Length: 123
Image (cartoon, rainbow, N blue to C red; front, side, top):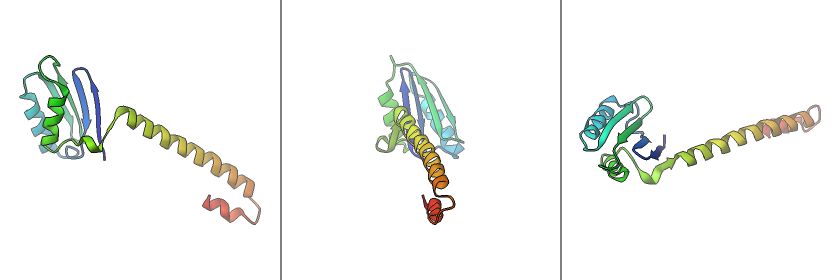
């Protein structure tokens, strides 16, 4: 699982492999974040590793929260993908699957019954 981040004014959502299926660390992080002045609520789903932080941007900024998460080993900017990157990768994968299905079907039909039919399996 990669790191994921999505920021809106007053809201950060991250996914972290270190929080996934780790209820003790996840709950500890929620408690620590909820102690910060300006953080209104921190919610974690330890099944998915998703953490949502709702905050008052007049009292705390997103970089402070992200830096804290990095120091605690729950986030890595270098390995993170943004929402736009996530959607782009999903679209590329979907397009590839559709192309493979359509092209494979055409090639399989065109070669069916010919001496090249075994090649259709490889394509």
